[in-house]
Image 1: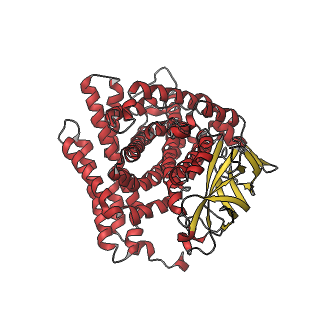
Image 2: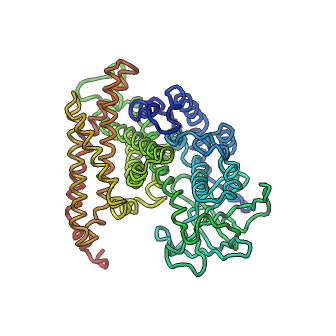
Image 3: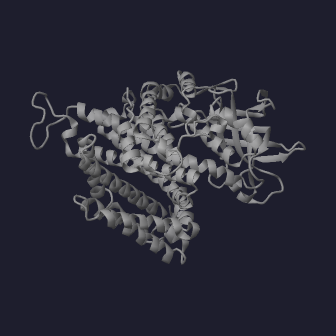
Length: 591
């Protein structure tokens, strides 16, 4: 059976050596010394490896079962969920006013990686709840917050987001779900939603659905969409549960992966709902949840890559196959371990350099969310908005790619369910699709985010890289890390200039290159992260503190990413500059 070990040492390195969180002036960061974060991460890591990881294969093989309108989750999920609730793990960064612990988002992000890596399907029950909590916290009335948030923070009640319908996914303006106003200020919600993660289950006493619907007479398309709170059970004024609402699960979807999470068809038959936010401004409120979810999905992508890599590494060190071409390295055995072979090393280094770079990238993003929420830093908010589609799109594409690469290390055994590697690939696959398919993320990046606030964020991003390269480019041992980063950044800027010059003439010139641009930007972001990690590792080595071998490995891995992955930006630039004609030239009937 596969295993999971929480990468606490690497998380501590990112938090304290790279981000230097305890030195930050952001509210709450001064409390995050290495002793405190180490204790939190150590305890979360034990839960991830000892409780959640063994349930991962159980969830995959048993799945969820619909019985008489109730979804039964896999064996052990209920006990594990109670453990998470009792430990306060569902409320780490939630508002203390509603029972949360008020910790910074960056620490909750690190814990979230562990739980997702150990059992992605299980962690979605609380993950979706957190997103619904955030939407109500940001847009709800005081009465709504008081009624719903305490129970959602504790996960006594869980939450969902209901967007997709059978005939519309990305184009939500086509939705048909209706919200009829009632005399008491409530609405009657009627329609069907599909692909609803954690839509029905037996882990909580109530489920608070956030549902997009149209109020009759409103504007056409997306401008006529509103967001509603629709509880599974009605909530009385004293907080007790009342009658069952007119919402029911139609079926559980049969999926490729994440079998342990109940992905439901939800039927609303005149269910009572309450407006969240402003009429016809539902997408603004829902985006609070969606943006958080997209960063969370990016995290899921590299978390699956991490656990797959961990198991592939163990196998590569244990499995004896062939002899090293440079001479026998295991003379006492019949063959050398797989890890002696250059192609296996390449494969593992691809995975290692991605997962560690991705971790630093997401934690940096989480720290900027804290800067905005806790310190009012507007540039940080703009930067996160710019980077969110890259976090979601690039990290899930590469996360799936790494899960498949880890499977490859096993050879034929990687294709056999007994070894568990196929689950990581199957579970990782959905991350490229839900919360906005990655093609949509690329369009969002190029079509909206580059021009955000007059391009302030992307200009600040390029200036950040320029300043970093200037500051560290001449330092001993940094040339082969900074040089490729500088070249990759130039490629990215050249692609941006192409969009500006050619996109106005023909928008397809920009849109046909958007996916390549997202990957270019992803490589540059990870290149920057590896540059920062290299600087931090050199500082630690110079100070003579910590594990010297750990820091030396960081420098070797940074050089690997710079040499083997940053040159990909030139390929992506060439594709972008080929324009739209090669993409759009073939008539639809000729496909």
